Amino acid sequence: QVHLVESGGGVVQPGGSLRLSCASSGFTFRSFGMHWVRQAPGKGLEWVAVVSFDGSDTNYAASVTGRFKISRDTSKNTLYLQMHSLRTEDTAVYFCAKEGCGGGDCNTFASWGQGTLVTVSS
Amino acid sequence: DIQMTQSPSSLSASVGDRVTITCRASQSISSSLNWYQQKPGKAPTFLIYDASSLQSGVPSRFSGSGSGTAFTLTITSLQAEDSATYYCQQSYSTPPTFGGGTKVEIK
Image (tube, rainbow over all chains, first blue to last red):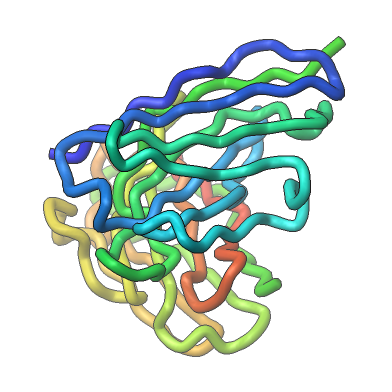
């Protein structure tokens, strides 16, 4: 059974940095792309970033390009999101999600973690 | 970016009712359309992929249809546990984008 557990959220001042982690188990981590999706309080879902199954390719939403970096450590079965220059509008619950198709990128979020809250506030 | 528009934004229905949610894409996305269910305070769960294929374990009262720019999610006999917000999402191109959500409440 797929199990995804995010951590690293918290309160940070505007302009600050934070690194989120997503520990994965229950599937062959190195075979699947991984995503970050966020949800601002009371709002809908917004895709943030994706890393390919082998870490060779990444892609970002325009709203975070140049500020966020997605990466993965296959030896630790862990996904990361390094966030810099945080803004108040980045306040959200951040979910990691497993790609729906192995070895490829089909932009489908088959399994989700429980989320970690990031609050950007002075 | 492809824009996804859902309607209605909310609805109230009784147990046993048939419920239909509509999702429209700003351009053709073939059948690259997914549906998710999200209950309050929880992560979304994956319901339907490729517009009409039911994810394993999802009750058969859920179904999806459509192609091109117009899609529907139907719950044939609403149950109390179906109270949730439903999101459509296009997987046709990057960035993947979501509809604004439809909140389903039980009368």
